[in-house]
Image: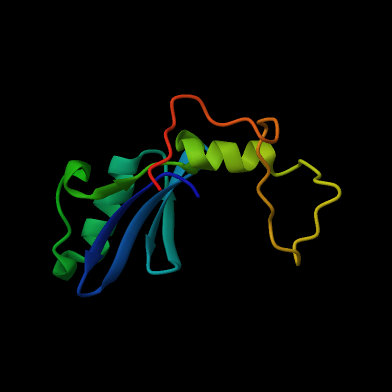
Length: 112
């Protein structure tokens, strides 16, 4: 996922998406044009669709950050290449304790 500004309208979903060093202005999935800045993309969308009543400033749009900035996305990307051997996904997962058998947990009382 890339960083983008999003604004829903009755005319469709307007987006300003970062694409490398440039910005793309889109309505739904259709690209309108490419621009050097997000502000230029906003101006182009406002000029092309005045009836959509798009906000004048990007601060009024919803900003969706690039996935690389989200911790779970970085983790998923980092662990994507790990090979897991000896695990059959069709078998149920068995939890194993690292505690020695017969040794009770510390500070745990039996409430039974």
